[in-house]
Amino acid sequence: MASAIAYGLGIRIIAPDLPGFGQSDTYPDYRLLDWADVIARLADELSIDYFSILGFSAGGPFALACAYALQRRVQQVTLVSSMAPFEFPAMLQHVNKDFKPLYDLTVTDYAAATQQVGMLATNAQDLLSTMEAPLNKVDKQIFNNPDFKSVYLQNMSESVRQGVKGIVDALRAVRSPWQFDPAQIDCPVDIWQGGEDAIIHPEIGNSLHQNIKNSAYHYKSQEGHYLLFSHWKDVLTTCKSRVSS
Image (tube, rainbow, N blue to C red; front, side, top):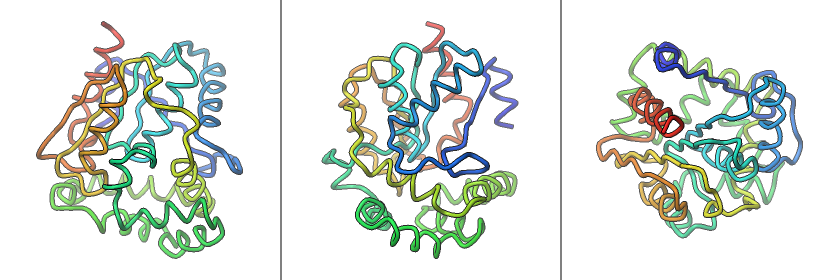
């Protein structure tokens, strides 16, 4: 369904795995800006000069890193339910209390963080259950769709194909200082945020909007963390309009 919508809009989606996910090589101690280098090399390899980039949840920081580092190659960024730098007051005040200790542990005790994630994600189903636990009824309705849940479980399977270090490395990259200020990003940034998001508080999305000068804030008061999947066509249509205009 998602691919069909993208195809109908004339959008080509390329979704590379982070280091250590799926069959992607590990990249010890990488930071967000290192990921931007990876994306630049991938685009070169595919002969793509310009592109838009979308980041969902913890993927938001990776998308912003690309926009900052690659500058004019990134024509537009879409953030959905995105995290902000941990230095932002909104993150310090509103970051999900169930997840924050683990994020902190990735930078203070990597081995302990790996052990903890390993206990939470012994297999894809356990990892999916961990992801579902803090969700409210808005998001649980999305997960109750068997087709969505099947695809999401496949995604979880790929994230632990090589073990859990890929997850820990990604959490550490997001939790570490970002090495750049989102305020320095010049390209158009569309920020989508659900008012019923129990993982990324709306104030976090709003703080990104306030700090990124060329941003548009799409606030959906009745949606939760997984609004990307209920508003997929709207998100992609908006992305395309920013590039075309």
